[in-house]
Structures are given as structure tokens and as C-alpha cells.
Image 1 (cartoon, rainbow, N blue to C red):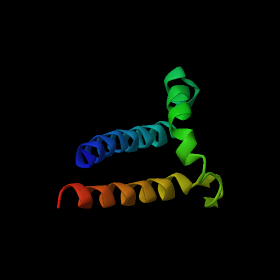
Image 2 (image 1 turned 180 degrees about the vertical axis):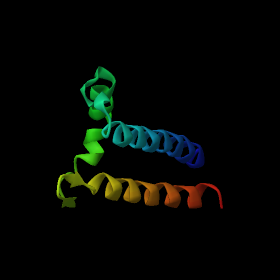
Image 3 (image 1 turned 45 degrees about the vertical axis):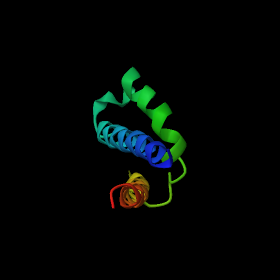
Image 4 (image 1 turned 90 degrees about the vertical axis):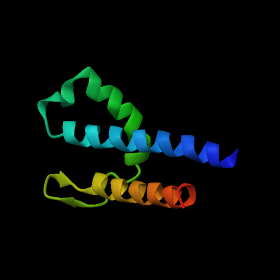
Length: 84
């Protein structure tokens, strides 16, 4: 039962990871003014907002990369528990 819950949590977190990647890539395009981007921002900001402004060089904010790296580390830990 616990493994099944962890498996579905892992799938959800993996999907959330890809949503964050799409959000970050779209932030470099003119689509930042679109409704789709606004929806993605509402989904992603609770996590990535924690890291906002920590690592800024010039006009470029590198903290989403830090957030993605930590999130990927979490996913790898869950993978080890599930698939070993």
C-alpha cells in the first residue's frame, strides 16, 4: 500500500517537474503575457517562489535552476526507494 502511494506520488512529482521546465522555457519567450503562462505560474510559484531572488546575476535569475536541481534530487531519492 505504501509503495503504491509512493509510486503515484512519484508520478505526480515527475509531472510537476516537467511543468516547471515548460514554465521556465516559456519565461524566455513572448508568451509570458499569455493566459497559459499565467496558469503555469499559479501552479509552479508555490515551489519556485521559495527560491526567487537567491542567485541573480545581472538581469538573469538562476534560482529556478537551483529549485529544479533540488526537486530532481528528491525524485532520485524516491526512485531509489521504489525501484531498488
